[in-house]
Length: 184
Image (tube, rainbow, N blue to C red):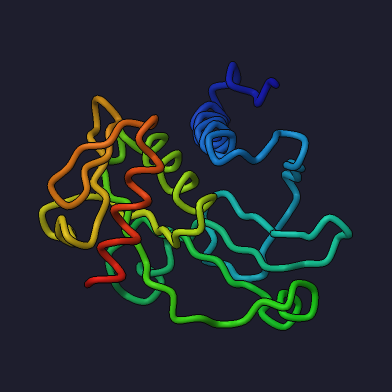
């Protein structure tokens, strides 16, 4: 799909969109489920990049959001990279019967360079019933080996509680997480 990559005026925007589409593919979201609408607009002025909306198969709006790098600047601070979203809880509850729970959360951490691997591991854990969130790994934000799955930026292997796991070891990693959380 051509995104206008050859046009210097939109090359940066096209590159960002291509990266987003590539990561959505890693998440297992088929390109047929993505409708590009360049005219889509969120109401708030602080959105500064890609905006999105979640819809059910029958078109019900379930939420939306986007990039808003300029929001902190508008509030008097320094411009900061940011993304956010909101969910229409009433619509989700009515459509899917979603309810709150006190499920333990597993943090999947890694560098930006490891983003496709982080996404793969988080999706694999979620497919097996483990609640997982993504965290960028930095010395200031690290959660600790007992509470996080850390993804190696070069090999893509996962490290958890002192052990290393490859993608073929996903079941063993899940068992270790479930065992640790039930005893932790």
